[in-house]
Image (tube, rainbow, N blue to C red):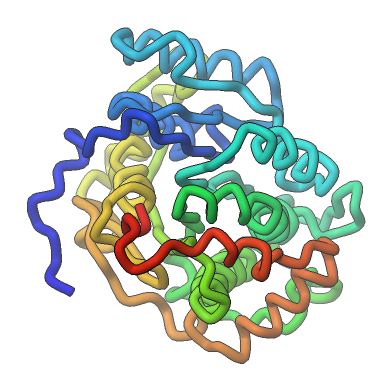
Length: 328
């Protein structure tokens, strides 16, 4: 496919009438992705674990996008580390009809030094970053299929730096904070690519794409009350890395493009132009995230851990004839 080079992250296509769900909307990449979608006319389910932080983020969107309709965003409490919370939120969204896209963004970036588990008994980093999103995407599959929708999984540069094979994704032994983070991101990307293979095989009109934000730091991000307030020292340290780092606002660009660009196809991998920063471009993922044996193993592990079996047969009923509109 010919690369679309005229894409302007600051001037998105008109998204009026479209509905998206973004996990982890209260700060960072999730907040800026939500703001960019609203600015383009979309309706956005902003989700987060903490109601107060979610309310502050919604208020920030209203301040920064004053022309948006009062109901451009909806708050939805969703904790991806808690499968009960995932099921409840998904049921609320399914009851509203179709969904044009879901950005599977929420996650733990700074894991605990010692292994911790969730209320469901899963290692907290793997549960938050990978399992919860696997369950959410499965629970929302029919809503996405109804609208020829798209799911975007948020990967990381770390999968190329340290390509651990997640033979023990729950890290029952050998836990370290770095390994927990990297394995969770390998799992996230591998599940995203495996999802697209299975969706295509089942004839489900939903695309699965993986994207990463490069090296995006809060110290290079605009200060927004209730959303981002880095200390002076944090700004000083992050600005020393200006040659390789970028803001969270720019880090959201590849994620949003992967979600809404009509020329993006399922199974693709998107990130900043220079890997760590820059405009979004189609890129090559790390080898381990493309390993189909690893992906099949992780898919089985995710099904066993969450109890969620994606309803491929039910979702395939929404398949359009060839003349129908393309995935977007």
